[in-house]
Length: 221
Image (cartoon, rainbow, N blue to C red):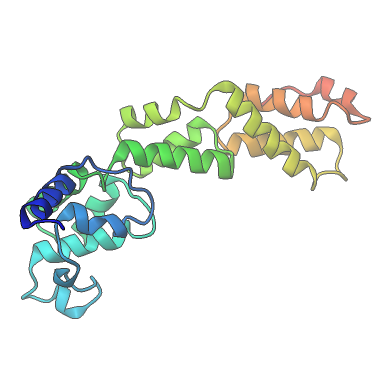
């Protein structure tokens, strides 16, 4: 049978445990890390009482952050913008963001890695397009560069090939030159360089009966 001191020691050990790798819906881990009992949590941010003149700004700010982090991770800049938009005092916003960062609920490096993995696999985006998206999310450039380093040239070629093969299904009735322009343009919009895009498209169209038509086509600038 555990003693009071044993239970207290267990609570201390739990509180000092390193932050976990929270991903997506972080609500399950919030209580342990923020140190807030569920029954003491502030009301939802759309509750009139939560945004009224008598509301505690810190409780409101904490609720906004938890609401934003329920469902998916977000960058620190996204969360700060949300707090700014709700007129949370800057000093409270920064203090809470620091606390959430300390316990691992806000982590730009983890967010960037997850974003790159998801968007590269799901949308086939090249590093140039991914970098632009991370910049819009407010992720610092050096953090973004580290996350993008995992997408090497071979991974880019594989993703580009998959995109071309999918798109080719709708281009069976067009000539090779037209298909080439459309496919290279599609890859360009995904962030691929013109050289890589044209090389991949040329490889994928090599088996066409009129592949010789490609001999007069040059990659766009």
